[in-house]
Amino acid sequence: MRYRAVAAPAVFGTWFGDGVTPVALADAPMVVLNRKDRLQHRFLRTLTRRDLDPPIHYVPSVTAFDEAIRLGLGWGMVPEPVAETDHYRELMPGRRLDVPLYWQHWRLESDALAALTSAVQAAAATALR
Image (cartoon, rainbow, N blue to C red):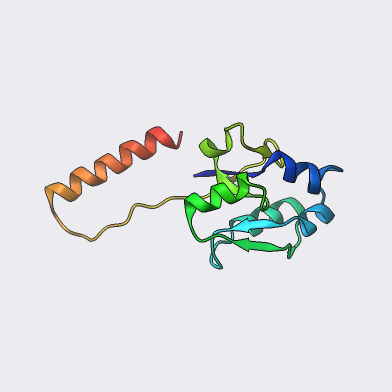
C-alpha cells in the first residue's frame, strides 16, 4: 500500500511555511496511530537520514486518525487514495512510502476460505494499482 505524508493546509502553513526542512520536521507535531506505528518515523528517516523526535499525538483509531490530521492536530501518513482529497496538502509531492501487504490465513481447506481469498486478492489488485 502506498502512503503519502499530508497535513491540513493550516498546519502546512504554520509548520512548513519556510519549506519542509529537517528543522521543521523535527518541530512539527506528528499524528501516529499507536506506539507500534513507525510509518511516520520511517518517512522522516527517508527524507532526513536522521532519527528525529518530533512531538507526537497518538490517535488509536483509523477514522479518528484521518480526522485528527484534517482538523489540524499535526501531519501524518495516509493511504494514497485518502491523500487525494481536497482536505490535505502533501508535504513532499512525489515522495511516497510503500508498505507491503500480506494475506494470511490458516491452512484450512474450505470453499468459503478459498472464495474469500480470491475476493481479497481481486479487491487488492484493483485498489492497489
